[in-house]
Length: 221
Image (cartoon, rainbow, N blue to C red):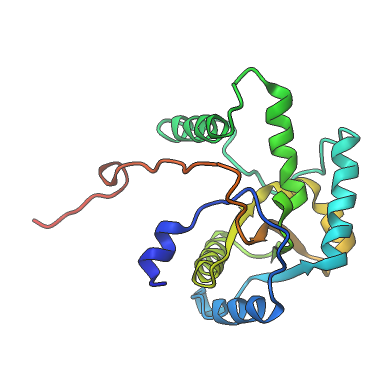
């Protein structure tokens, strides 16, 4: 698969089969992703990969919190601006509507929407997941490096015939993740990522992207 095909076919898959992801594939992808560029070669990512009993334990603990109506831990960073301006506000709203429409969930069905959100903490059934941390002393440039690292990982998984779903939602239950992975002091959980083979029986559709003219300006004169 060439890089254009990997980019075009990558999407946030939210339904996986239980087919295991081979350990050698996980190691190959993460070894290659280490070549991601980072300012001054800081390589600010700290990654934990969970499969088997470790992932099952995390899912169980997270499910218990969801069932108890636990709103989650104190946030260490804001996922989104509290009052996004146009066009970001409209893009966020449109993405939510497209996602739930693909699932056949109407706007007024809050219970069904809540169930769809809760699937995050089961990794959408995926048999493998990674959790990416960054040290709290790092700044915006290093957070950008983390984004490039995660994108590289997702594209490499596509080259291996796998899909993924990056999930900032895991930061909601960051303390539960920490109970399982035991990160050293000073690290902030940025996100999790579900990894596996897509369950094609579930239709999540694809979220539209803004036209090039909205996001890119060419200056050639």
